[in-house]
Length: 132
Image 1 (cartoon, rainbow, N blue to C red):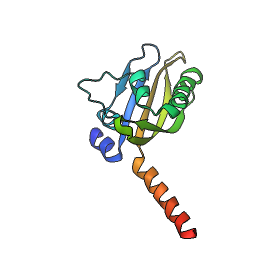
Image 2: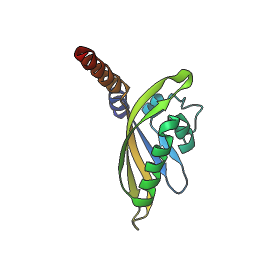
Image 3: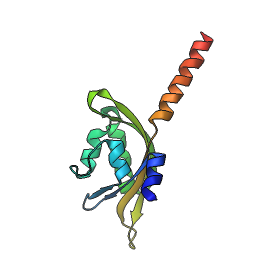
């Protein structure tokens, strides 16, 4: 049931161990990122390579801030694929601490929002054209 819910909502989950840098990506996150789970080892660098270059620094800063401050984050950014195809994503992250209060993991979810963003752009264009 878990995988069906993620597919239905276009939401993939992820985890990053801040000490070892080990990453987990759910099957839906592999699909959103367009990586083959059989041939791709999840990593922060592989993920960041997929983030649009104009958004990459801000995404990295939010991850770093969560690691160093323990604060949750929410962020919209773009993914860039071969041929110039772009997807829009909303991602949230939450630091997890051990019994000593040390941040050991960042867990989160990423929801593909491309359809929503494109619908908003089309609506804005129609409003502008109707005023013109």
